[in-house]
Image (tube, rainbow, N blue to C red; front, side, top):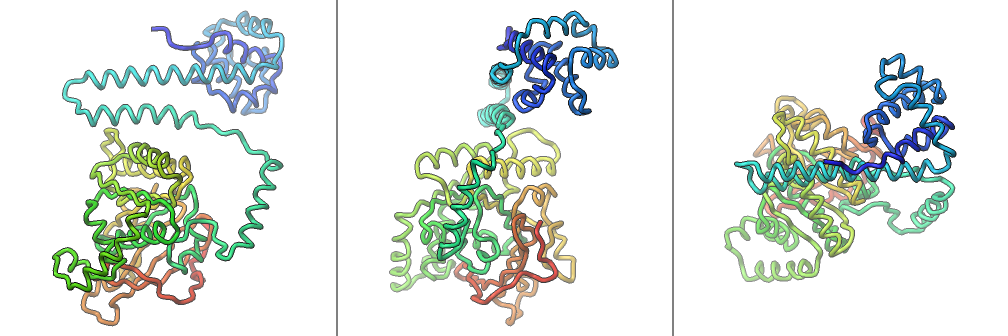
Length: 449
Protein backbone atom coordinates (compact mmCIF):
# COMPACT_ATOMS: atom_id res chain seq x y z
CA UNK A 1 0.00 0.00 0.00
CA UNK A 2 1.44 3.33 -1.07
CA UNK A 3 1.22 5.77 1.83
CA UNK A 4 0.93 9.56 1.42
CA UNK A 5 4.33 11.22 1.02
CA UNK A 6 6.09 14.04 -0.80
CA UNK A 7 9.45 12.81 -2.09
CA UNK A 8 10.36 16.06 -3.85
CA UNK A 9 9.57 18.17 -0.79
CA UNK A 10 11.70 15.90 1.40
CA UNK A 11 14.64 16.22 -1.00
CA UNK A 12 14.15 19.98 -1.19
CA UNK A 13 14.33 20.33 2.61
CA UNK A 14 17.57 18.38 2.80
CA UNK A 15 19.05 20.22 -0.18
CA UNK A 16 18.16 23.60 1.30
CA UNK A 17 19.99 22.76 4.54
CA UNK A 18 23.03 21.38 2.68
CA UNK A 19 23.44 24.64 0.72
CA UNK A 20 22.49 26.86 3.68
CA UNK A 21 23.05 25.08 7.02
CA UNK A 22 21.35 27.91 8.96
CA UNK A 23 18.03 26.64 7.57
CA UNK A 24 18.16 23.74 10.03
CA UNK A 25 16.86 26.06 12.77
CA UNK A 26 13.63 26.60 10.83
CA UNK A 27 13.24 22.95 9.86
CA UNK A 28 13.70 21.64 13.40
CA UNK A 29 10.51 23.32 14.56
CA UNK A 30 8.40 22.12 11.65
CA UNK A 31 9.43 18.53 10.99
CA UNK A 32 10.98 15.59 12.82
CA UNK A 33 12.96 12.65 11.38
CA UNK A 34 9.87 10.43 11.53
CA UNK A 35 8.04 12.82 9.20
CA UNK A 36 10.32 11.72 6.32
CA UNK A 37 8.88 8.83 4.34
CA UNK A 38 11.97 7.65 2.53
CA UNK A 39 14.43 5.95 4.88
CA UNK A 40 17.51 7.55 3.30
CA UNK A 41 16.03 11.03 3.77
CA UNK A 42 15.14 10.23 7.37
CA UNK A 43 18.69 9.07 8.14
CA UNK A 44 20.20 12.18 6.53
CA UNK A 45 17.93 14.47 8.53
CA UNK A 46 18.86 12.65 11.76
CA UNK A 47 22.53 13.22 10.89
CA UNK A 48 21.85 16.92 10.27
CA UNK A 49 20.17 17.21 13.68
CA UNK A 50 23.07 15.50 15.44
CA UNK A 51 25.53 17.90 13.81
CA UNK A 52 23.34 20.87 14.74
CA UNK A 53 23.31 19.68 18.36
CA UNK A 54 27.11 19.90 18.30
CA UNK A 55 26.93 23.35 16.67
CA UNK A 56 28.51 22.01 13.47
CA UNK A 57 27.34 23.47 10.13
CA UNK A 58 25.57 20.64 8.26
CA UNK A 59 26.96 21.20 4.75
CA UNK A 60 27.46 18.37 2.27
CA UNK A 61 30.96 17.46 3.42
CA UNK A 62 30.10 17.54 7.16
CA UNK A 63 27.02 15.38 6.68
CA UNK A 64 28.91 12.89 4.48
CA UNK A 65 31.71 12.57 7.06
CA UNK A 66 29.19 12.12 9.89
CA UNK A 67 27.28 9.41 8.01
CA UNK A 68 30.57 7.71 7.10
CA UNK A 69 31.58 7.61 10.76
CA UNK A 70 28.29 5.87 11.57
CA UNK A 71 28.60 3.42 8.71
CA UNK A 72 25.49 4.78 7.00
CA UNK A 73 26.86 6.74 4.05
CA UNK A 74 26.43 4.00 1.47
CA UNK A 75 23.03 3.12 2.92
CA UNK A 76 21.67 6.55 1.95
CA UNK A 77 23.21 6.54 -1.53
CA UNK A 78 26.74 7.76 -0.83
CA UNK A 79 28.36 11.06 -1.78
CA UNK A 80 26.48 10.97 -5.07
CA UNK A 81 23.02 11.27 -3.45
CA UNK A 82 24.12 14.05 -1.08
CA UNK A 83 25.66 15.94 -4.00
CA UNK A 84 22.50 15.45 -6.03
CA UNK A 85 20.35 16.89 -3.20
CA UNK A 86 22.48 20.01 -3.04
CA UNK A 87 22.76 20.40 -6.81
CA UNK A 88 19.03 20.14 -7.55
CA UNK A 89 18.12 22.76 -4.92
CA UNK A 90 18.48 26.23 -6.44
CA UNK A 91 17.40 28.15 -3.34
CA UNK A 92 16.62 27.57 0.33
CA UNK A 93 13.82 30.15 0.26
CA UNK A 94 10.99 27.59 0.01
CA UNK A 95 12.06 25.37 2.89
CA UNK A 96 9.22 26.45 5.20
CA UNK A 97 6.45 25.57 2.75
CA UNK A 98 8.16 22.28 1.91
CA UNK A 99 8.43 21.43 5.63
CA UNK A 100 4.72 21.99 6.06
CA UNK A 101 3.97 19.71 3.10
CA UNK A 102 6.12 16.94 4.56
CA UNK A 103 4.55 17.36 8.01
CA UNK A 104 1.03 17.20 6.56
CA UNK A 105 1.82 14.04 4.60
CA UNK A 106 3.21 12.53 7.79
CA UNK A 107 -0.06 13.26 9.59
CA UNK A 108 -2.02 11.65 6.78
CA UNK A 109 0.19 8.54 6.96
CA UNK A 110 -0.29 8.26 10.70
CA UNK A 111 -4.04 8.70 10.34
CA UNK A 112 -4.15 6.03 7.65
CA UNK A 113 -2.13 3.61 9.78
CA UNK A 114 -4.32 4.43 12.79
CA UNK A 115 -7.36 3.65 10.65
CA UNK A 116 -5.88 0.27 9.76
CA UNK A 117 -5.31 -0.52 13.45
CA UNK A 118 -8.89 0.52 14.21
CA UNK A 119 -10.17 -1.74 11.39
CA UNK A 120 -8.10 -4.60 12.82
CA UNK A 121 -9.62 -3.99 16.26
CA UNK A 122 -13.11 -4.06 14.72
CA UNK A 123 -12.42 -7.44 13.12
CA UNK A 124 -10.90 -9.02 16.25
CA UNK A 125 -13.15 -11.65 17.71
CA UNK A 126 -14.00 -11.08 21.35
CA UNK A 127 -13.47 -7.30 21.18
CA UNK A 128 -16.32 -5.35 22.72
CA UNK A 129 -17.70 -2.19 21.14
CA UNK A 130 -16.30 -0.23 24.08
CA UNK A 131 -12.81 -1.65 23.51
CA UNK A 132 -12.95 -0.68 19.83
CA UNK A 133 -14.17 2.84 20.63
CA UNK A 134 -11.39 3.32 23.18
CA UNK A 135 -8.79 2.09 20.69
CA UNK A 136 -10.11 4.46 18.02
CA UNK A 137 -10.19 7.43 20.35
CA UNK A 138 -6.68 6.77 21.63
CA UNK A 139 -5.24 6.38 18.13
CA UNK A 140 -6.74 9.65 16.88
CA UNK A 141 -5.86 11.55 20.06
CA UNK A 142 -2.23 10.39 19.77
CA UNK A 143 -1.95 11.84 16.28
CA UNK A 144 -3.60 15.12 17.32
CA UNK A 145 -1.50 15.72 20.43
CA UNK A 146 1.79 14.83 18.75
CA UNK A 147 1.18 17.53 16.13
CA UNK A 148 0.05 20.29 18.52
CA UNK A 149 3.10 22.47 17.94
CA UNK A 150 2.77 26.17 18.52
CA UNK A 151 5.00 28.89 17.20
CA UNK A 152 6.77 30.99 19.85
CA UNK A 153 4.85 34.19 20.58
CA UNK A 154 6.78 37.44 19.99
CA UNK A 155 6.75 39.51 23.18
CA UNK A 156 6.38 42.73 21.17
CA UNK A 157 3.00 41.47 19.91
CA UNK A 158 1.71 40.37 23.32
CA UNK A 159 3.04 42.96 25.76
CA UNK A 160 0.29 45.52 25.19
CA UNK A 161 -2.41 42.95 25.87
CA UNK A 162 -0.64 41.86 29.05
CA UNK A 163 -0.40 45.47 30.25
CA UNK A 164 -4.08 46.05 29.48
CA UNK A 165 -5.05 43.01 31.56
CA UNK A 166 -2.85 44.17 34.46
CA UNK A 167 -4.45 47.63 34.45
CA UNK A 168 -7.94 46.10 34.26
CA UNK A 169 -7.09 43.82 37.17
CA UNK A 170 -5.81 46.78 39.20
CA UNK A 171 -9.13 48.58 38.65
CA UNK A 172 -11.24 45.49 39.33
CA UNK A 173 -12.97 45.48 42.76
CA UNK A 174 -12.13 41.79 43.27
CA UNK A 175 -8.66 41.72 41.62
CA UNK A 176 -9.30 38.09 40.82
CA UNK A 177 -7.53 36.58 37.80
CA UNK A 178 -9.27 33.21 38.00
CA UNK A 179 -12.68 31.77 38.84
CA UNK A 180 -13.61 32.36 42.52
CA UNK A 181 -14.24 29.22 44.57
CA UNK A 182 -16.62 30.89 47.02
CA UNK A 183 -14.12 30.57 49.89
CA UNK A 184 -12.46 34.01 50.37
CA UNK A 185 -9.40 32.68 52.21
CA UNK A 186 -8.73 30.14 49.47
CA UNK A 187 -9.27 32.74 46.75
CA UNK A 188 -6.79 35.11 48.43
CA UNK A 189 -4.16 32.39 48.15
CA UNK A 190 -4.93 31.31 44.60
CA UNK A 191 -6.51 34.36 42.95
CA UNK A 192 -9.22 31.93 41.91
CA UNK A 193 -8.98 28.78 39.80
CA UNK A 194 -6.80 29.66 36.82
CA UNK A 195 -7.56 28.66 33.21
CA UNK A 196 -5.51 25.64 32.06
CA UNK A 197 -4.66 24.61 35.65
CA UNK A 198 -4.98 21.06 36.94
CA UNK A 199 -6.12 21.26 40.56
CA UNK A 200 -5.99 18.18 42.77
CA UNK A 201 -8.28 17.95 45.80
CA UNK A 202 -7.28 14.92 47.84
CA UNK A 203 -8.35 13.29 51.06
CA UNK A 204 -9.13 10.02 52.78
CA UNK A 205 -12.51 8.35 52.04
CA UNK A 206 -15.45 10.22 53.67
CA UNK A 207 -13.22 13.19 54.52
CA UNK A 208 -15.50 15.48 52.48
CA UNK A 209 -13.87 15.74 49.03
CA UNK A 210 -17.12 15.42 47.11
CA UNK A 211 -18.98 17.74 49.49
CA UNK A 212 -16.39 20.49 49.03
CA UNK A 213 -16.39 20.00 45.26
CA UNK A 214 -20.19 20.23 45.15
CA UNK A 215 -20.10 23.41 47.27
CA UNK A 216 -17.61 24.94 44.82
CA UNK A 217 -19.78 23.89 41.87
CA UNK A 218 -22.79 25.52 43.53
CA UNK A 219 -20.95 28.82 43.95
CA UNK A 220 -19.44 28.99 40.47
CA UNK A 221 -22.72 28.08 38.74
CA UNK A 222 -25.14 30.14 40.84
CA UNK A 223 -23.08 33.11 42.03
CA UNK A 224 -20.48 33.49 39.26
CA UNK A 225 -22.99 32.43 36.55
CA UNK A 226 -20.42 30.20 34.82
CA UNK A 227 -21.02 26.77 33.28
CA UNK A 228 -19.69 23.81 35.27
CA UNK A 229 -19.11 20.30 33.93
CA UNK A 230 -19.17 17.60 36.62
CA UNK A 231 -17.96 14.10 35.73
CA UNK A 232 -19.19 12.04 38.66
CA UNK A 233 -17.79 8.52 38.35
CA UNK A 234 -18.59 7.58 41.94
CA UNK A 235 -22.05 9.01 42.49
CA UNK A 236 -25.24 9.04 40.36
CA UNK A 237 -26.92 12.28 39.33
CA UNK A 238 -29.70 11.88 41.91
CA UNK A 239 -27.22 11.79 44.80
CA UNK A 240 -25.40 14.87 43.50
CA UNK A 241 -28.71 16.74 43.25
CA UNK A 242 -29.63 15.81 46.83
CA UNK A 243 -26.31 17.21 48.03
CA UNK A 244 -26.78 20.43 46.10
CA UNK A 245 -30.28 20.89 47.55
CA UNK A 246 -29.27 19.97 51.11
CA UNK A 247 -26.46 22.53 50.99
CA UNK A 248 -28.53 25.27 49.37
CA UNK A 249 -31.72 24.76 51.41
CA UNK A 250 -29.82 24.01 54.64
CA UNK A 251 -31.85 20.87 55.20
CA UNK A 252 -30.16 17.73 56.54
CA UNK A 253 -29.09 15.37 53.75
CA UNK A 254 -30.37 12.34 55.66
CA UNK A 255 -33.83 13.91 55.94
CA UNK A 256 -33.93 14.52 52.18
CA UNK A 257 -32.78 10.93 51.61
CA UNK A 258 -35.45 9.45 53.89
CA UNK A 259 -38.26 11.87 53.02
CA UNK A 260 -38.81 12.65 56.73
CA UNK A 261 -39.41 16.35 56.11
CA UNK A 262 -41.57 19.07 57.61
CA UNK A 263 -43.68 21.34 55.43
CA UNK A 264 -41.23 24.18 56.09
CA UNK A 265 -38.31 22.04 54.97
CA UNK A 266 -40.12 21.04 51.79
CA UNK A 267 -40.78 24.72 51.06
CA UNK A 268 -37.11 25.56 51.60
CA UNK A 269 -36.05 22.77 49.25
CA UNK A 270 -38.46 23.97 46.55
CA UNK A 271 -37.17 27.54 46.88
CA UNK A 272 -33.57 26.31 46.81
CA UNK A 273 -34.20 24.38 43.60
CA UNK A 274 -35.30 27.47 41.64
CA UNK A 275 -31.84 28.90 40.79
CA UNK A 276 -30.64 25.47 39.66
CA UNK A 277 -33.35 25.44 36.98
CA UNK A 278 -31.52 28.19 35.08
CA UNK A 279 -27.95 27.21 36.02
CA UNK A 280 -25.53 25.65 33.54
CA UNK A 281 -24.48 22.64 35.61
CA UNK A 282 -23.97 19.52 33.54
CA UNK A 283 -23.51 16.18 35.32
CA UNK A 284 -22.13 13.09 33.59
CA UNK A 285 -22.44 10.12 35.94
CA UNK A 286 -20.79 7.51 33.70
CA UNK A 287 -19.09 5.03 36.02
CA UNK A 288 -16.40 4.31 33.42
CA UNK A 289 -14.58 7.18 31.76
CA UNK A 290 -11.29 7.85 29.97
CA UNK A 291 -9.61 11.26 29.66
CA UNK A 292 -10.28 11.10 25.92
CA UNK A 293 -14.01 10.59 26.51
CA UNK A 294 -14.01 13.43 29.04
CA UNK A 295 -12.29 15.69 26.52
CA UNK A 296 -14.77 14.79 23.79
CA UNK A 297 -17.84 15.34 25.98
CA UNK A 298 -16.47 18.60 27.38
CA UNK A 299 -15.85 19.91 23.88
CA UNK A 300 -19.44 19.11 22.88
CA UNK A 301 -20.72 20.97 25.95
CA UNK A 302 -18.48 23.95 25.16
CA UNK A 303 -20.03 24.13 21.69
CA UNK A 304 -23.45 24.38 23.38
CA UNK A 305 -22.86 26.69 26.38
CA UNK A 306 -19.43 28.24 26.00
CA UNK A 307 -16.27 27.94 28.09
CA UNK A 308 -16.75 26.35 31.52
CA UNK A 309 -15.79 28.06 34.75
CA UNK A 310 -14.72 24.65 36.05
CA UNK A 311 -14.50 20.99 35.03
CA UNK A 312 -14.73 18.56 37.97
CA UNK A 313 -13.74 14.89 38.03
CA UNK A 314 -14.82 12.71 40.97
CA UNK A 315 -12.49 10.93 41.22
CA UNK A 316 -9.22 10.43 39.36
CA UNK A 317 -8.50 6.83 40.42
CA UNK A 318 -11.87 5.66 39.03
CA UNK A 319 -10.85 6.72 35.52
CA UNK A 320 -9.03 4.40 33.16
CA UNK A 321 -6.68 5.21 30.32
CA UNK A 322 -8.55 3.35 27.60
CA UNK A 323 -5.55 1.14 26.92
CA UNK A 324 -4.44 -2.17 28.37
CA UNK A 325 -1.82 -1.21 30.94
CA UNK A 326 -0.91 -3.87 33.49
CA UNK A 327 0.80 -1.46 35.89
CA UNK A 328 -1.75 0.68 37.74
CA UNK A 329 0.86 3.32 38.63
CA UNK A 330 1.68 3.76 34.93
CA UNK A 331 -2.02 4.04 34.10
CA UNK A 332 -2.66 6.73 36.73
CA UNK A 333 0.46 8.53 35.48
CA UNK A 334 -1.01 8.59 31.96
CA UNK A 335 -4.44 9.70 33.22
CA UNK A 336 -2.88 12.55 35.20
CA UNK A 337 -0.84 13.72 32.22
CA UNK A 338 -3.86 13.60 29.91
CA UNK A 339 -6.05 15.56 32.35
CA UNK A 340 -3.41 18.30 32.36
CA UNK A 341 -3.45 18.23 28.55
CA UNK A 342 -7.25 18.58 28.61
CA UNK A 343 -7.01 21.60 30.94
CA UNK A 344 -4.50 23.28 28.64
CA UNK A 345 -6.33 22.46 25.43
CA UNK A 346 -9.73 23.64 26.70
CA UNK A 347 -8.20 26.55 28.67
CA UNK A 348 -10.36 25.67 31.65
CA UNK A 349 -9.45 24.76 35.24
CA UNK A 350 -9.85 21.04 35.91
CA UNK A 351 -10.54 20.04 39.52
CA UNK A 352 -9.75 16.35 39.97
CA UNK A 353 -10.53 14.62 43.24
CA UNK A 354 -7.99 12.05 44.36
CA UNK A 355 -7.61 9.37 46.98
CA UNK A 356 -4.82 9.18 49.52
CA UNK A 357 -2.81 6.23 50.69
CA UNK A 358 -3.21 5.01 54.29
CA UNK A 359 0.09 6.60 55.34
CA UNK A 360 -1.49 9.54 57.25
CA UNK A 361 -3.38 7.14 59.54
CA UNK A 362 -0.07 5.73 60.82
CA UNK A 363 1.52 9.09 61.74
CA UNK A 364 1.13 11.14 64.90
CA UNK A 365 0.51 14.20 62.72
CA UNK A 366 -2.15 12.92 60.37
CA UNK A 367 -2.18 15.95 58.10
CA UNK A 368 -1.52 14.68 54.55
CA UNK A 369 1.71 15.29 52.64
CA UNK A 370 2.31 15.26 48.89
CA UNK A 371 3.89 11.81 49.19
CA UNK A 372 0.52 10.46 50.38
CA UNK A 373 -1.14 10.86 46.96
CA UNK A 374 -2.25 7.41 45.92
CA UNK A 375 -0.92 5.38 42.97
CA UNK A 376 1.42 7.88 41.32
CA UNK A 377 3.92 10.64 42.01
CA UNK A 378 3.02 12.00 38.58
CA UNK A 379 -0.17 13.49 40.06
CA UNK A 380 1.97 15.85 42.13
CA UNK A 381 4.18 16.67 39.13
CA UNK A 382 1.33 17.38 36.71
CA UNK A 383 -0.82 19.38 39.13
CA UNK A 384 -0.59 23.16 39.33
CA UNK A 385 -2.23 23.14 42.75
CA UNK A 386 -2.58 20.32 45.27
CA UNK A 387 -4.96 20.73 48.22
CA UNK A 388 -5.75 18.23 50.96
CA UNK A 389 -8.96 18.28 52.98
CA UNK A 390 -8.28 17.32 56.60
CA UNK A 391 -10.65 16.94 59.55
CA UNK A 392 -9.15 15.73 62.80
CA UNK A 393 -12.58 14.61 64.01
CA UNK A 394 -12.45 11.99 61.25
CA UNK A 395 -9.85 10.20 63.39
CA UNK A 396 -11.16 11.22 66.81
CA UNK A 397 -14.88 10.53 66.72
CA UNK A 398 -16.67 11.82 69.76
CA UNK A 399 -14.25 14.68 70.48
CA UNK A 400 -16.77 17.50 70.84
CA UNK A 401 -14.19 20.28 70.61
CA UNK A 402 -13.08 18.94 67.22
CA UNK A 403 -16.59 18.84 65.71
CA UNK A 404 -16.79 20.89 62.53
CA UNK A 405 -13.10 21.79 62.39
CA UNK A 406 -11.65 21.42 58.91
CA UNK A 407 -8.45 22.46 57.17
CA UNK A 408 -7.71 22.82 53.48
CA UNK A 409 -3.97 22.29 53.22
CA UNK A 410 -2.42 23.84 50.09
CA UNK A 411 0.73 21.72 49.74
CA UNK A 412 1.67 22.70 46.18
CA UNK A 413 0.95 25.90 44.32
CA UNK A 414 2.91 26.37 41.11
CA UNK A 415 2.07 30.05 40.77
CA UNK A 416 1.78 31.21 44.37
CA UNK A 417 2.20 30.49 48.06
CA UNK A 418 1.16 27.42 49.98
CA UNK A 419 -0.80 27.69 53.22
CA UNK A 420 -3.73 26.49 55.29
CA UNK A 421 -7.33 27.59 54.81
CA UNK A 422 -9.57 27.09 57.83
CA UNK A 423 -13.09 25.86 57.08
CA UNK A 424 -16.13 24.71 59.04
CA UNK A 425 -17.77 21.41 58.08
CA UNK A 426 -21.50 21.06 58.69
CA UNK A 427 -21.84 17.33 58.30
CA UNK A 428 -25.62 17.01 58.21
CA UNK A 429 -25.77 19.52 55.33
CA UNK A 430 -22.75 18.06 53.49
CA UNK A 431 -21.43 21.60 53.47
CA UNK A 432 -18.16 23.42 54.08
CA UNK A 433 -18.25 27.08 55.02
CA UNK A 434 -15.56 29.70 55.39
CA UNK A 435 -14.30 30.21 58.93
CA UNK A 436 -14.40 33.96 58.15
CA UNK A 437 -11.01 34.73 59.60
CA UNK A 438 -7.93 36.31 58.13
CA UNK A 439 -5.32 33.83 57.01
CA UNK A 440 -1.67 34.32 56.27
CA UNK A 441 0.42 31.82 54.30
CA UNK A 442 2.26 29.37 56.55
CA UNK A 443 5.59 30.88 57.46
CA UNK A 444 7.35 27.53 57.39
CA UNK A 445 5.76 26.05 54.28
CA UNK A 446 5.05 29.05 52.08
CA UNK A 447 6.93 28.41 48.85
CA UNK A 448 6.56 28.89 45.15
CA UNK A 449 6.57 25.43 43.60
